[in-house]
Image (tube, rainbow, N blue to C red; front, side):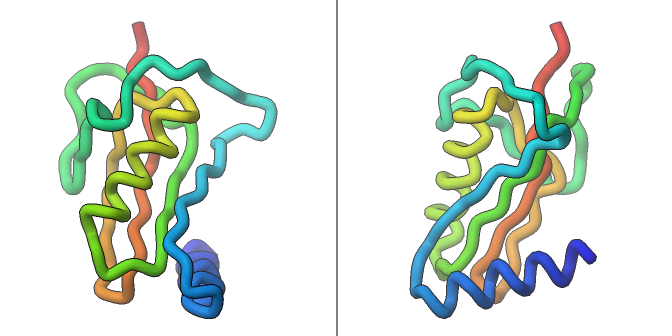
Length: 106
């Protein structure tokens, strides 16, 4: 299911020739205030942070051959939605990136 959604997002972005990023919360009624600036959002690909955290959502970006641009967009979405870090970051050769957004527990 997740793979089909990722393929659909990439396809739609290719049709519209855009670079975009979206955030999907883990729970619909949940929202968090911004506390970490985009440039300070931590990135984890194959490891997880040692601090306790809660997953608050997922982000994806598509349609760019510029990996840095997509990661910047993921960080902005994570920050705007109250995240502190991105875990499980995956970047595809087809111009898409996905990650889970986490928020550190106090």
